[in-house]
Image (cartoon, rainbow over all chains, first blue to last red; front, side, top):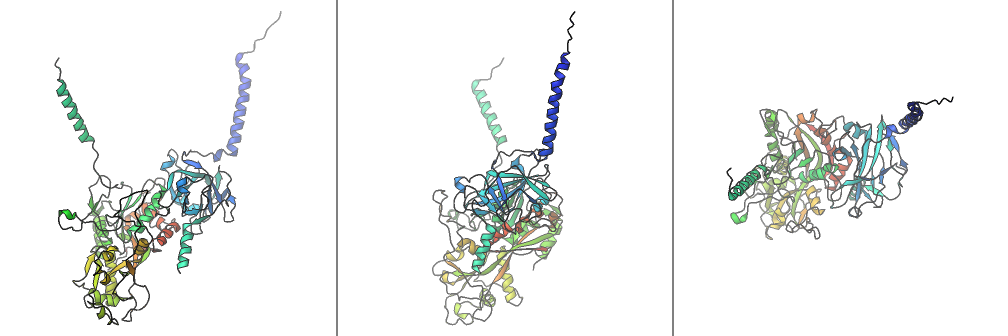
Length: 211
Length: 399
């Protein structure tokens, strides 16, 4: 007599399910350990390019101290300026904005980090800072990074006799932890792809010429 | 069943529609009016352009506070109804034109009120923005070239329940302006101006050391009552007169402050003999091409020509006049004056911020630099022809 042993259907499905759960849990733990803390908790549809940050030697940097003043020396857009902002005298200004959970990016509050910088290369508009510009910590005192430590940087373009272009801009997310910050996302840029002269430097030069 | 006649129903529908239209019509308003949480300033003509740039940026692409796009805005009502800084007048077709009292709507949903024309008028409006110690908070701050008087501080305490607090953010210079072709000596001292404005010197050749000068009558002009720069000038005359206030001669004409046409608009016969105290900053702005010809309609393809300071010249700021005294040249401080209670408010201004509006914009001891004293704003001020200078004056008063 041949006995046929029937394996319960539940047991047949349990094995693969355990394996699947193990894979998911392992992946989740790995994700949380790697960049889970750096996951940007918002999407800004107006961000049409990204920004690279540069040190005084023209090297791209991805981290720094919130107490450094200026915050960075140059901010370079990965996206080209529209025609109306590619004219002589066009300039770019770096801003910091405070993401707030559940609030649209258009409603976030912000501050200027630099004056307008006249850029030479509309393919990569850039803002320039001076030693008189503020540190990120000044911004954070007024606008704490309450949304998982994130701050959004924006590069607004302007041109003579034109309103500032604030409906579309290059943006970069940075994450603050204690007195340090680091870039989340972004891309490589060439800090020397053009020049940018801060309006503060322009005025100092003009007044020095008057003296 | 009774049926309503067709015509009657149509009439009813029209009546209902009209009724709804009456109910739904929005309240009429002229220019945009600030929201309750916007910061609103009024006052001085001479300080107005720099504050406009601080709020909204300049024409060269340099941003101002509102360029950030924050929810609450900095709104600074000009002293004059005209963007070129000229006075408004009644329609000459209705009779002799007289100076109009233009109005502004301080806050959305409120009636228009008289536009304060000058720092003095602005301070008067601020100290009356409340009663019995309770502020109405329609006006947040005043632009002025003068600190509040002791009487205004007393009125502020009584009406608003708080003293006024002042900070200075820039310095301008007041010098004497003439027509490009003038009978005035190249340098006039404060003491000579005392003699001109009190009527002692009526003709150019009566000035010390100027016997060979023109025999024409001098036409002394002075900014209108309520103008802060008039107070700056009369205070300078008082100082040059050993501390005694100067009684103005009947020949002194009141004119719109800081307006080049007060001289360039005179007849060819009068132009060479007119003098007026004029701010260096406004002259710089005129020379920069900021103002355009107001007689040409707006046309994006063919913009009106830029105005200039042509026809007007400023006397030198250094050297000695014919009487041996230093040439007239006095400082015009640019003050922002606000309720002291606002600087201590625990209510953050912008969403997500830790700062109240005074801390964010003007005065923040021990905290991040207020916007008006940041390096980008200092560059804006320099471009406007004034010298950035931030200083706290607390509850100080002026005479």
